[in-house]
Length: 260
View 1 (cartoon, one colour):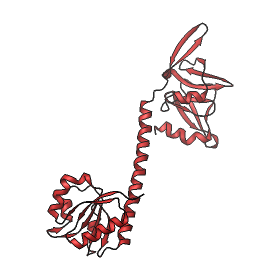
View 2 (cartoon, one colour):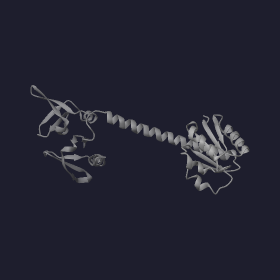
View 3 (spheres, helix red, strand yellow):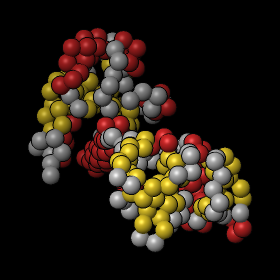
View 4 (cartoon, one colour):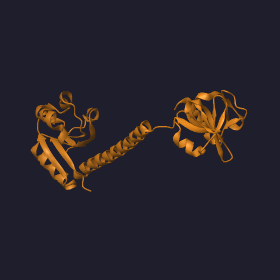
């Protein structure tokens, strides 16, 4: 695919401009020179009104009315710049602004090609980073928009009750049955698997500590270092069975417990 760019050239030597235009066309016919400015004042004036129309700037350092670094003092340059000069003493100052490369005259086609290839790589990397950021933002928006189950219907004899999630100390599995246990230490069988509960519970509040238990963080009274680098969860009110964080979940549990 040909590199498509709209380019501003800031250069006061006509032969240098013509040579640069030939090289740009040779590199890619999709590159268009939008404007040529031969003075600091002209470049400042043009950039103030037209910067959004270009993708790249080629800039000589010594112009008719001064050094091109003055341009950056008078207008905010937001586009990448490739400097072209006959002198190498300005290299350090060039890289303090938007420079992506610094070419010495006489510019050769291989030199120009290397600079444009560098620009292509930078643009590809930027697009990849933007795509990653968009994906993270999308995931964040989905999490914000997602609603979690806030109550559970249970059957008590001939009665049906609704128990809110904040009343639940934990969920646990016993064989094929899954129970919720309330702060009053009452347990009720529910029509969920632990895997299904993980999908509908708020992960900031509930964490599956092992194959048997999903724990409510607000009901943890203490966490004790257990054998083989595992952790033991102590609940409030206390539960008469041990709740041990499985070894493979210890690191994830610590992050959850720490609020990360």
